[in-house]
Every structure is written in structure tokens, then in C-alpha cells.
Amino acid sequence: REIGVMRAIGASNGAIQRIVIVEGVIIGMLSWFIGAMLAFPAGWGLSSAVGAILFQTALPYSFSAGGVFTWLAIVAVLAIVASSLPAWNASRLTVREVLAYE
Image (cartoon, rainbow, N blue to C red):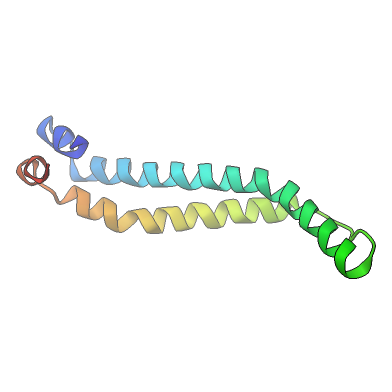
């Protein structure tokens, strides 16, 4: 519906595509942030549990900042790629098609 309103007020195909891709990237970045925040305590807990169960001692745990930022780049690229086809499809919709859908 928002796409129909934007088309009705004159949004270009490129503007619609950029909006959809930016929304996809924002969702990807939020998921990366949440995952990064949960990865440290989850990794530490699993490391401790596996060490205690298998070796009766705690395993050393290290958290790589480089790995976190590598995943940031991977998530950004995947978010752009995953949003491209929906963005292209959304930009091809007419006002009539969008408003008739609902």
C-alpha cells in the first residue's frame, strides 16, 4: 500500500528500489547486531559446557572482533542481494495494481 501511495505522488522506479533495498539492509544490520550481542555469551557458555562435559576443565574462549566485522560485511552484501529482486518487482508495480491488491 505504501508503494501505491508513493507511486501516486510521483516516486520514480529508482526511488522505490532504493527504499526497498535500504529497508532490507536495515533489517540485515539489526539482525547482525542482535546476533553479535548474543554470540559472545552463547559462545562462552557453550565453550564452558563442552569443556566441562568432555574434558572436565574449561576451554579457552576467544571472541574475534575481526570475525564480527567480517560478518557485518557479509550480511550487508547478502541483504543487498536479497533485497534486489523484491525492489525491482516493487518498482514495476503500478498504482492500480498496488491498490487493487488489498
